[in-house]
Image 1 (cartoon, rainbow, N blue to C red):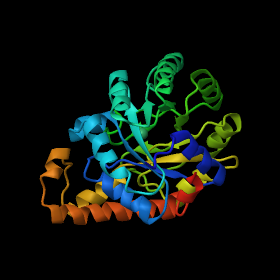
Image 2: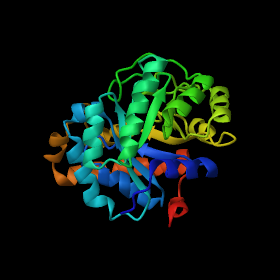
Image 3: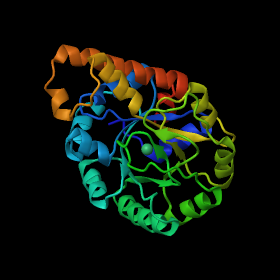
Image 4: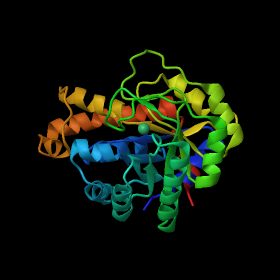
Length: 297
Ligand SMILES: [Zn+2]
């Protein structure tokens, strides 16, 4: 099975100056097309889904993980199955039980001290089971409430990031530097690169950029290529869903079950559009093309 730990994947990418896409298929059908896109570009890849997505698309952690493991072994590239934004420890436990390789605890709306306390508990629980943890410090805004209902934006304070990773021993840290979840209302969202540099100067922990959909390629590449390694995990969900719905000629989201009951030929064509989007992101935004070999043991 080509499963690689989140932190070893991200540290390798961080040192080599590329990013790894953490793609959300949002339903079990599209898992295959995310993996096909990564394989076509010989790129490492992270497949993720969040607690809100389990609710919106009516799919369970168990069902998602089973669909993932049914096919992941057929793809000879480094892969990780990751649980995105989750606030509830019971959902995290379910996902770990189901075989997720890493999980995100999002206690970013709590106070700094509470965030440390909650994250630390999750890290201790998960590490004991061989599972790695991403946490969030600062608040990443949202135009779309599908990943998180936070719509307040609060930039990460570099000195707090240092204290946070030292106290929690978290494996990856999502930072707020100007990106947002969902569709951007402005054409050219600004990233606070100075803040990113300050954070990197203080900590070695892999950094995660949320809200990677809709950003100009150069904006993402600039955030990846900071001296010492910028962000190395880039979350992309909205762009995949947009490509999928456009190909289906639909405006509204469909649940996992609704998708699985659709005509197979129509679904296949829409799946290929998602694959194409994944390939474009890998080639133009992430620079992870042909990097699968970095992880061969
Ligand atoms: Zn996010």
